[in-house]
Structure formats: structure tokens, C-alpha cells
Length: 264
Image (cartoon, rainbow, N blue to C red):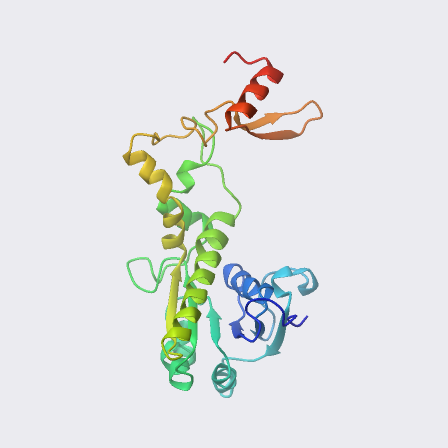
């Protein structure tokens, strides 16, 4: 399904090197904003394990099949890069360079390119070459330890917090900032390097500020927004489901207390 061509990114051309998870999601967001996204698929598929017809991250994208391990493969990608504004890749550190489509090769072909890349641990550092997944990234940042009931293990928030919030969204913000920079700097491109651990750690900035100010305790179930307050949490309902309650404002809190018969 091709892009609509409508939206604030209409006319922006994006090359996505197909992968799974946060990279495709970031490219999907750019397509949703109107960019023309060409997904470079590999022989054998992405490895997601579902019917591509149900992979919503493919929406509003075109697709081309390229074997990057074949002699002609890297050249085909560089031909696409020459006409593109943005490239998105989510390979482990060094893989794009070994394939001949790393930042140096792409920016040599197209100096105005915004080269967006995303990893779990970053391009350098003690964990850079280590395999990882969302739960490991958010555990290292401390974000995982903030979620869940007191006296039990942390709750696992699917892969939403690391992969998509700390990864995809931060990559897209960086790409949009780089595109804006190119508009004011004679079209000069740059590399946007997003690490999921960095983005996820940044998401916790407000809580760390509250900790420093004495307004948050470093334990679960003891704070305003982590289930300690009776007016901000979940309650089982008579039909076996659960209801979410967020009555932070005084007028809502008073009504909630009245309805449940809680002593204020």
C-alpha cells in the first residue's frame, strides 16, 4: 500500500531497511505523516512470523526486494539513497557498514541525507555488541523497576516502553529535527543515532526530578501515579473485568470517594 502523499511530510522520500519492531514502526509514523516510504525487504521476509497482510507497520509504504548479501545489493540501496531525504535502519552496530550501506557510504552518495539508525544499547560502549530486547533495555534504565505492585516482581509492559516509546518515537523526533536543520543549513544531512536505553532513561526524567525534590519514593506502590493513591489505579468490576480510575482533580476525587464509600 503506497503512501497517500498528503500530510506535513508530503514530498519527503524515505528508504527503510526492513527489520522488525521499532524500526518499521518509526518508518510507519513518517509514512502516516505523508512521507513516501520505500521499504527495502530481504529475501525470505522480515522474520516477524505473521502474515504480512496483518503487519500494520507496512501501511502507506511501497516495497522493493533486495538481497543485500548479493554483489549488486548494496548498489541498489545506494541508488535509492541518492534520491532520498531519509534512511532508516535498525541493524546491530557495524552491520550496515559491513554491508556497504553505512552512514559514510550513504552520505558520500547523498550529502543531504538524514541517516536515522536505532540500536538497543548504542553504537559504542560495553554492551553495544550484545544481543538484547525491550525488557533488558528498560530494566537497565530503571524504568521497569517503577512498574508493578509493591512486594512483587515488576510488571512487564509488553514492548511498548522501550522499543516504541524510548526507541521509535525518539528516532522520529531526531529525524524530524535533522530534516528541519537541513532546511536551514543549506541541505546538509547528518546521522541521527537513537539508542533505546537512552530514550527510555529520558522518559523517566520527571520521576527522577521528583525523587530529588522529595516528592517520589524509590519503591513501587508508594507514590501518586504508581497505584498508591486510591483515586489513581485499577479496580475489579462485578462482571470480572477491571476499571481504570484517574480522579486527580479535586472535584473528581470527591465524587469517586462518595461513590465507593471511602473515608477521606
